[in-house]
Structure formats: C-alpha cells, structure tokens
Amino acid sequence: MSDFVVGDEDFLLDGRPVRLLSGALHYFRVHEEQWEHRIGMLRAMGLNCVETYVPWNLYEPEPGRYGDVEALGRFLDAVAAAGMRAIVRPGPYICAEWENGGLPHWLTGPLGLRVRTRDAAYLEHVERWFRRLLPQVVERQIGRGGPVLMVQVENEYGSYGTDTAYLEWLRDLLVACGVEVPLFTSDGPEDHMLTGGSVPGLLATANFGSGARKAFETLRRHRPDGPLMCMEFWCGWFDHWGREHVGRAAADAADTLREILECGASVNIYMAHGGTSFGGWAGANRDGELHRGELRPTVTSYDYDAPVDEAGLPTEKFRLFREVLEKYAEGPLPEVPGPPARIGTPAAGTVDGWASPARVLEVLGDEERHTAVPPSFEELGVDRGVVRYRLDVPGPRQPYPLGVAGLADLATVYVDGALAGVLDTADAVLPEPVAGPAAVELWVESLGRVNYGPRLTEPKGVTGGVLHERQYLHGVRSQALRLDAFAPEAVARVPFTAVPAAPGPGLFRAVVGVPSPGDAALRLPGWTRGFVWVNGFCLGRYWNAGPQDSLFVPGPVLRAGANEVWVLELAGPAGGGVELVEWAGGGGEPVERMEP
Image (cartoon, rainbow, N blue to C red):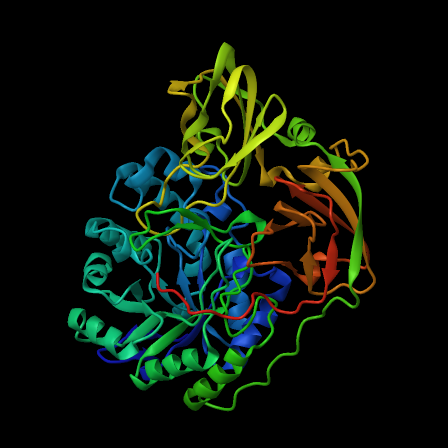
C-alpha cells in the first residue's frame, strides 16, 4: 500500500516528492472497448496520471433509479492496469461542456438556483447520490492499493457562488463516505474566484490556458504554502454550432506547458483526449462576457483540439507535448500505441424507410398531456429530445402576430399543417400573422442545457406561453419524444414506409454494408439537423450549420456486414446520403482560442 499527501511544498508519495503529470480523459466520452488504448496514449505522451469527471445526470435519470454507476470503477481499474494514477472530480456539478453541467434535469427543474447551495432539499439529493457513487472511488484509493490520489470538492465554484458552508458540507460528506486521499478545489486564478471557491485546509489549484507565472502568483497570494498545480491547462477549446472552429497552435500550447513545469508545478492537461459527447449529452453556453446572452449549443465532437484527437490519434500537439514531458519522466517513455482498427473502405448507405414525426411520436412518445399553459421540458420529465406542443387559435378573427414568450430552445412551427417558420430566440414571432381559427403545432427541440455561468439551471422548451397578438392561447396538448426512447426493440415497432419523393422531417432508416469494421466518420450530405444512431448507439446531434461536418463512429459500434442507421431529421430538407468514410480528423484550420 502507498501513501499520498500534500506537503508544504510538494506532493509526497511514500514520503518522496512527486510531480503530477496528469491528463483529462472523460471515460463517458469514450467507448469502453477503447479505454485501454486512450489511456495508453496518455502514458506514451509522458503522463503519469489520468483525471476524469463523473456526470451525475448520466447515471440517475430519475431520483433513486440508477444506471451503470460501476462504469467509473471499471475505468479506474483500467487506469491502474496501465500503471497510471487517477484524480477523480465527482461534482456534483462538473461543467465539462456537458448537459446541465452534469446536474439532473429533475433536480434543477424544481430547485432552480437553490442547487449548488446549502439548501436542504438539494443536499439530500447530493448525499444520496454520493453514497451510491463514492464506493467506486473509496475502494480504489491509493492507501487501499488502488490508483486514486486525489478527489475534488465541487468544481470551479468560485465562478458561480460564495456559499462556503455548502463547500464545507461537501468536504465533510466526502470524508464521511470514506474518502481518505487529499481533497482539493480548482478555480480561475482571479481573486474573487479563489475567494469564493476555496475551502480552508484543502489544497487550492488554478485553471488557465496561458500566463502560468502570473496565475501562480495570484494563487500564492491566497495560498502561500503547498504544492502548485494547474488543474486545468486548457491546451485547446470547444466549438459551438454555427460558429468558427476554435483551436490553438501546437507550439504555443507546448510553450505554456513548459512554462507551467518550469514553475515547479504539477499539471493536468485539459483535455489530453476529448472524445465525443455521444447520446446528445453536449451542453450549451450563453454568449457574452458575463454569460447572459444568446444560447450557443456545443457541437457533438469534444475533440477540444487535444493532443490525442477524437479518434485517439496523435497530433502535432502530442509530439511537442511529449518532447516537453519526457524531460520530467522517471525513465524512457513507452512507445506510442498503434491506431485502433479503421474502416477498410468507404461505404454508402441505402435509405429504405421513412416515418413521419407524428407516427414516430405515436409509437415512441410519452402519453399526451393536457394543460392550460405549455409545460417546460422539466415539467414533462424530459432531459434530451423533442416536445410537440399543439394548441388552437380560436376564430373567426383577423390575422395577428403569433409568437412564443420564453422560448428556451428552437421551435419549428406549423399552422394548419404548413410550415410557418422556425423560432430561435426567447421572445420570437412568426414572420407572417395568423388568422383564426387555426391549428398550431410547435416542435421544440432541446439544444442542450447551459453548463456554465449564472444561467445554469434555466428551464428548457416553452417557459412562458404562446401569444396571439397580446393574448395568451390556453389549452395545450404536449407530447414528449425522448432520445432514450430510440431503443432497437422500440424502433422495430415504427411503421416505416417508402421514402417520399421530397421528404421533410421524420425518422429515416438506412442500411450500410461494411466489409471491415473499425473507427469511421459518418457523413450526412443533404441533411439539415437532428440525431443519428448506428446499430442502436446514439452518436449525437448533427447540424449542417458547421463547424462539425461529420460524426465520429467508434469501431466497436460497427459490425461486418449490414449496419442499421437511423436518422431523426427535425428540420429538412432530408433524405440525402449516409456515408461511412475513414476518419480524417475533426475541425478545420484553427483560429484564436477563447477564454471562458
């Protein structure tokens, strides 16, 4: 058994000073059969430690109903098998450009801004979750023969609030659950963030992408003693739909990594390997310096311009980081693992079936609910997916503007069955007035919940009402279509028909023949926006708005022979090609990266 402690100046492993050279790798963004390869890539880059978050909402879809919580333990075992150490950041809030920052929708819906505080109802849910999750961590601590060196208390809390009693309660809960390794916090290197997010007696670390010496000077003003560590060295950045690809020059990132290490600090490279936000779990941000502006949904790819790209391949940044890190290694670095199997030859699919949105809703949707006003996604119990709102404009009456108050996402509106417009702002109005009587349908899709900033916890869907002139229209029929409903046995019941000559939105079925399965990129030329599954595995959202133009397909998802692809097209035009091609890397030419 080993012992790891936070010393006055260094981390001490069995009494010997040690520098943590860590890399962020989110196991939930990587297919489990590829964990070993990705961990091996980090080790070959010169790292001795792996850091990961844990997304609460992925594992507790309803209060007290849990999914595969044990996945974290299996990942930590894989880290240990590779001879690496681990840092675990269990939240409960994680940010991570993940839906709702990892917080369950059923929690933030009723509690709103009471989350991430000492609120008793919130703490009750956190304690139940941590007592279910943390045994995976506790039994794998370094003092018990496992790889776990440290555990984080909350995440960048100083960017959000000042409830120090909440942070101290979390610290005490972690200890009560059996966490014996050092606890730490991480925040931006600014006085108000370190003041709001630090906990007396716990190691404080800093997150930044440049200016290491200045950042550590700020940290030292708050913590004169203890080892220095950059817990998130942002070596790249993430993308939003409809915006330019964001990257960072490899040489510039390597220079900052070198600066961090020359300061005598430990480091966690964020991200060392980004992976993919499979399943529609990508989050969203609010524009503006104070994060209160327009909603910006995050793309499916979490490549992050990381040194190990989305498909696990080394980049120029990997080569330069390896050159920097090998000077701090205790021995020769291992050889770089070979690439995973890749698809042998490109394959085009044949689209052989279509079902209208209404028919899909009949089979896979929730029961329709009748209410006076439109319920939010949270009130309908929807985390990811689409809600159809139906209501009537009474008549006779003259044409008036028809709009939505409090639209939190994107709504495709039909009037008497004809497309009337797409609304995408909080108080949007259709381009043409609507006369009564008329039947109105709004198909509202979640673009991802905000994962960072003061607009965290905001509800999704229609959060106000539908207005005809200044008059609210009451009497709403709402029906939800969840992404989780698209299981193979359920989709088998969908009554597919021949594809129309000029298809619009709907669920499309295609078959792609693959002679030799392996990692691939899925392209959807001629499609507009929606979600896609391969053999029942949800790759995530696609959108022809850019900058992402293909979706990563892990090799283990494919099989030799016929592969079934479902495309849920929500906008149209639709019904173009479905192509599996060899992975060529994500994104375009990098532009200047952005600070948060």
